[in-house]
Length: 384
Image 1 (tube, rainbow, N blue to C red):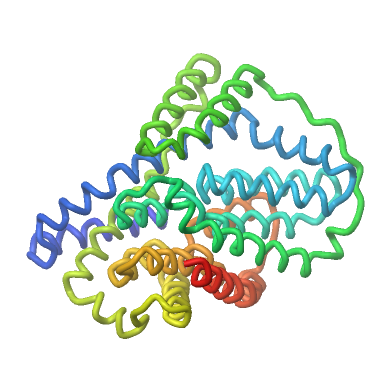
Image 2 (tube, rainbow, N blue to C red; image 1 turned 45 degrees about the horizontal axis):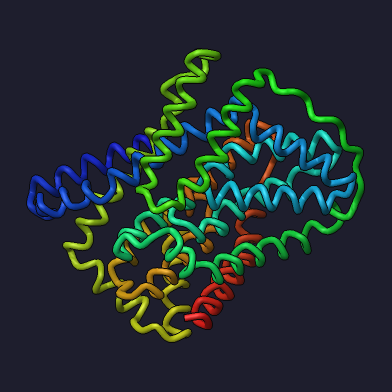
């Protein structure tokens, strides 16, 4: 609700800026034309993943992983890492943070393991693994537009090496800090059957077909919307009670819309010149580190979405846009508000009575965020 209130306030502020001429009407319309497909995708993919969760798809996959783990905690955890990466890359970071987190926490408790390493795995990888494809993060979809609408494969080619580094660094940090919990054994149980097998099979089929469609070159909102409509029909027939307004992430849509308008107005008031003085210019390794570090700092001061929108204006080459993405996606691990997914993740943990003190989260973030951003940016500079 707080994000909805903030989004509404930002929309009002944006309307005032348009009315007073600070933000020209043509610029506001250009922003709307740019972002409506992105927001439609966000709505559609959220509906798909929420309904797939209602069909118990994520629970079944996680419980299967417990069987495949063969009683070894480290192997189960690696399966969770794999699921979190695939979920983030193809279904977006919010899916991993919001829908996968409760599944893996309950799974860890079920087999007698501490939930914290699994919870940290989902939130860190939700952010750092969201570099590879445009659909992985709202910031990536904005970057894809800034890059001239390049194909998902061209985007992945640009981001592949830093994306791998951004996954490996937090995984290795987690392995070190959680080694006592992870190098133990557990007794796997047989997975419980789904309440409605038809919905489970339908959801699994839709998700499996959706993954290649999202990288087919079609505008991503088209396959996402088609998948959402198919699942809505199945649930309307078999479990109508699940269909509710809360499936639509309207709070995120309000917040993002307001941020787009206000940041665009800030550009008109000279924000790019200020950021250029802070983040510098150039494509050499030190310049890219300076830019990525500035973007990471910006994401932790405000939030990664406005930070991306702000720094995009001084990212005048593909490699500089990639550096900004590394900063805002992989660097937003320190403050709670740096990523909306982190706040939603924490709300889910509170509902499950899992305590993660923000002080501990921040201290861990101060270790893993600079390492991840620095090494991923150096990897980017080496391959360009």
